[in-house]
Length: 93
Image 1 (cartoon, one colour):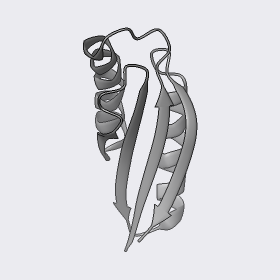
Image 2 (tube, one colour; image 1 turned 90 degrees about the vertical axis):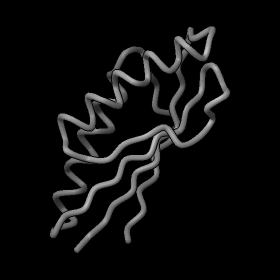
Image 3 (cartoon, helix red, strand yellow; image 1 turned 60 degrees about the vertical axis):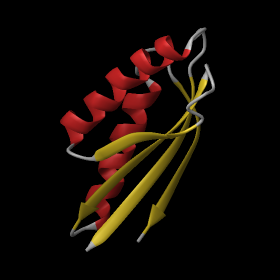
């Protein structure tokens, strides 16, 4: 069994309020959850207007499958609703 945890640091340029940030981020996080069947949540920088940290977790019998899904998740975040991925880290358990 393999468990992968991807942590993404995101920039949300143009967000002036936390409400706007959460609205933009929520849509992308929900798309990631439903499209890839992973767990995803905002885990850091909740009080910053233009920054966020999101964690995505997946369990699979094969590490390669997780790596492929994480690559597609990273791409979706990079192309999602004006978000910019400033850092991405993957841990294995």
